[in-house]
Length: 282
Image (cartoon, rainbow, N blue to C red; front, side, top):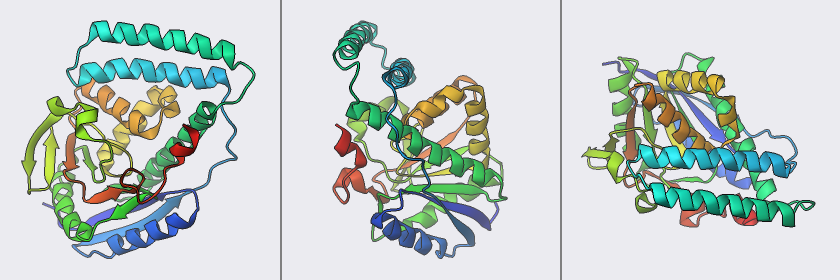
């Protein structure tokens, strides 16, 4: 088993005040020791947000609808009658909205553009990581909040990484959670719990993209899939990662998936530490 690890710690943010707090947290993580050499990078640039056209926003929504059906099957939740009702309801709402708001810009269109910008930052981080010789990348958004024992528990995280880096295994670790497990309906995917705080998943799945770790081989698989399916770049990062996992599973690519349960990092926009940008566009 390799002892020394090289890491890229990436902060995704918008350049506001809370980014400085998040950066200080990453700086502490970079100095954790444990035979870890870490470099911090940041991705904050985004063009001026221009709301998507209704045509483009509906295109994204249709991609989400298709993904929702795949997502149900992936979790072993076949509900054909309900899916049919949901699909018919969706198209009725779409047609009604299109007629009523054809010439107005809605919060939904602004939210659509922002989501694509956030996803783009994560993808840029992955490509930047692949240009280095690092073993893994940890990506953290600026609403992540360290717990008092985060740094201590992260040493257990490094144990998972060391065991898999030597075999070049695809590895995903979800560190911050966010959505309730009940809402996600992922019981079928959950496996055994190890080290008291971490759970192995039978199939790869992400909760949110607040803070996660990817091995090099997994990032390579992600990027290859995005080249085959550029339309996935239009999906919000949380859902895009689950789409990538579904595709890799269909290709029999084995991904070791670990979730911190409970999370070792708080998702601040969920816990109330911060107000999510999405609250402004409901």
